[in-house]
Length: 330
Image 1: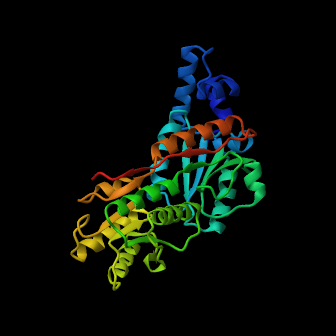
Image 2: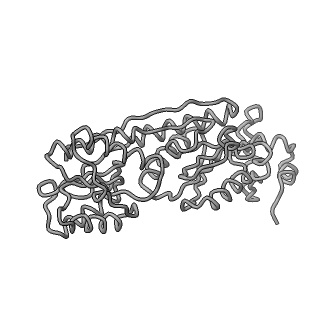
Image 3: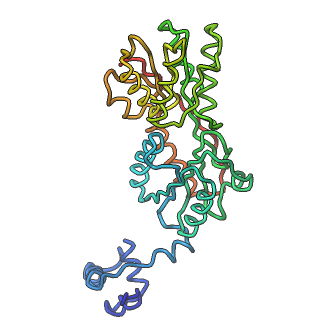
């Protein structure tokens, strides 16, 4: 049967308050003998405090909830790794939940994380949410930080990346290499980041005097398989593309595989660029040129926001805009 803190106090011959303070490293005024005695009783009885109940009341769980479509997605995983390391230095831990882009599941997870007593929720979403949640910055009483690339203008501000400028630089590089038939592999989503990347692609074409062509816009799932099939379609056209801008690095990897299987020499017979700048583009040769997002800086800034929000939940925070870097060198 599980022992209680009261029983630990009785076995140790001290008060419940003394046990609590020693367990929480606040027992500096107690003798080493008393501390060791209490800790020994705790160890012998395998006592674990019921943090759950106190978390609900005090909201001092030192846990941060995360809701993301997929924790393994390149952009998300890159940020979460930095965020985890930065928060652990301050004693915080992450509870990561996957939503698979389903708004019904996201709503259920918001409710569950609030019930668990997390101090804040980091919310990666491509779905729109009510003005009540956005303007107040909270789900019930739990602060919510949106990581949605500008979709929901949250109470605690957004960390945005220069998506349009990055896509513009990448497409401009393709143009400078003499390409006129430049295709884009994207999907049907209307998310902020994909819209911005598409606009950057269009702006580069327009400034170079190259006519925009709908037939060079290929809508595919943002996966390796999608990149592969999309590239096959583009290369089978009577007037094939000579360059392909992929709005995602996973798509670029599929594009790379298709180019290889079609017997084309990359950066000699056809040019491709990706977007995100994760480690995956470094795994193939020749290395895929890509627009690198500042994931480390993003994660550090997000950690700073979280720590500020947990201390001052009623203070608004402004937006932050980060630069992208197009890496044209192999």
